[in-house]
Image (tube, rainbow over all chains, first blue to last red; front, side):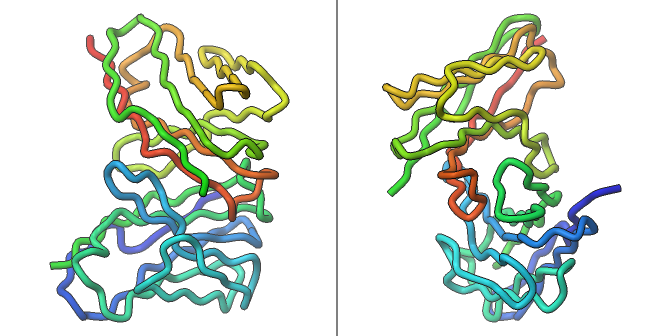
Length: 113
Length: 112
């Protein structure tokens, strides 16, 4: 089954404790991205990757890092999480940079206390 | 910059039609989308329309685009309880995922 998976689905952590949210897709997609969803703000893009070893900032990259060492994986790293990073995070992928064929993961709800 | 606006809430009775509205500011938008997000799930693309079209129909869904007013609407005929979800309007230039801008989402509640 074609899918985008994220782990963990739920995470509660404390300020400053490094964490990684994993994202994996099994469709051999070149393009992957991370979004955060906040009430009343819709989805905002954090980082995207056009292909292996090619990543770039989206609209709200501050406080986040990503890496793309393999085509299928695109982890989101919070080196020192803060409460304003409490949010719902989505990973998405598409064959290329095409918005009409993006697949979204199920989401990771992160709470930073 | 680009901006996409939607009302936050809509309630309808089961069997009625729902109309969810969206306005956007970027006149160069070429692709306009409607996504559905069910509780605890990711976004699912419902339908999209090119900016050179006025209308697109797909079973119970009708999308209307007024390019002059930069207004997009999604009509759901015979709304069912399974249609309860958050609906996001989004726009993109040239269909690029990098340039996809989402609205804030409209929570549709279908009452029995």
